[in-house]
Image 1: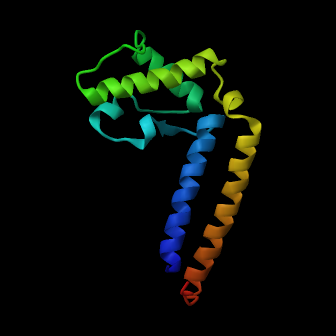
Image 2: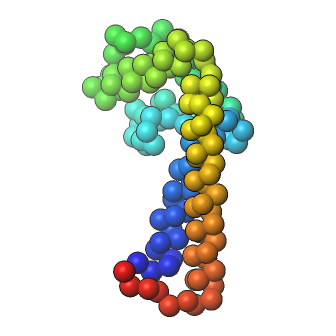
Length: 138
């Protein structure tokens, strides 16, 4: 794999890890919704917010205040999405309404450690690209 391709792959991992950290910590603004889906039905359950998972679930409940496990949508997909997000919201609500506590400090520490490792890998790959290092065939 060429260094540029490998760096692109590592950078995608960095973005996903940072997004998950943002979900837990709620420090950075990010877009949250059903599993990165971008169809119209999923976008109805998607918002950009600062505050992570806690802010997302609070926002979602204000948008769907009467949703429950029996709620139906205009399509099969819409029904599945509202029920899935409701189930996730209910778990969050029933367990203290605190994503950071639910996810745990150990998981957050691991994510941050992984982020540092991938950032170092990305920097090393960028250095190889900048210095025209020969690609190594694996």
